[in-house]
Amino acid sequence: VMTPSYAPGRVELAFTDRDGLPVAVQDLQVLIGRVTEAKDDIRPEFAPAGPVYAADVPLSRGKWMVKVTARAADGTLFEQRSDLYVKG
Image (cartoon, rainbow, N blue to C red; front, side):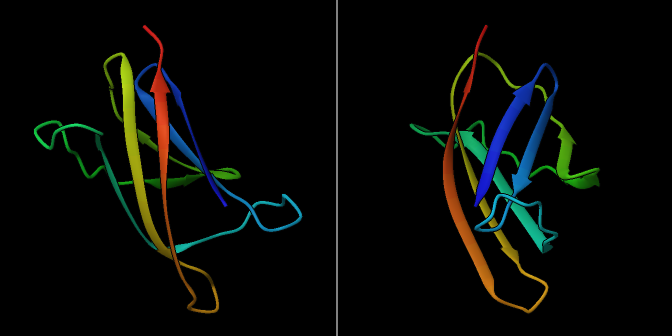
């Protein structure tokens, strides 16, 4: 499971297994955009930051979509789309 979170200027993605423990991923590709239009779409570079992956991304207030594609250590493809709400 991937859980996105936002603090001012920074997006973090937490990947966890069935037991809620952090897992490492490979070939991480992330699209962040508005749910209604593509003009604000960005593809930031995420890097490991302790138990999460993080990128410096300033987002304005409102609803955002986070679409993730990655591979588990065993090569299994992982894809997930989540909503991210940024408070203003």
